[in-house]
Image 1 (cartoon, rainbow, N blue to C red):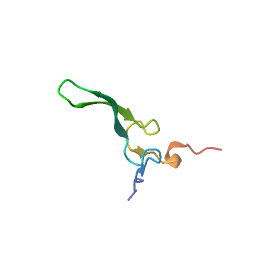
Image 2: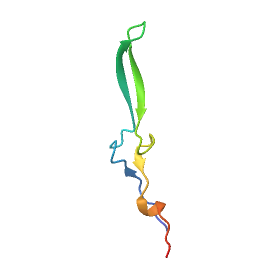
Image 3: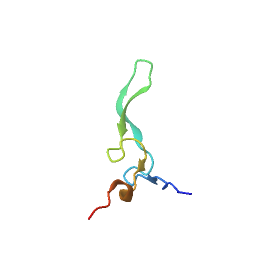
Image 4: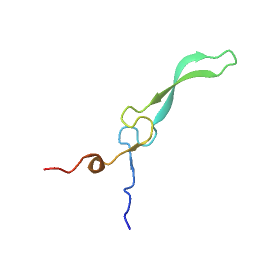
Length: 59
């Protein structure tokens, strides 16, 4: 029975792929305005693909 490799947690974001950063201003109802920022290494998935799976075997 073939086993699929377990996806590894992204080493750049430690599994927290999207964070919200406050801008310092507030909305009219008093809530803070935030911007979402995704991890550029994993594109917001939180996992990294195994290098061996991405490379092809050749001569």
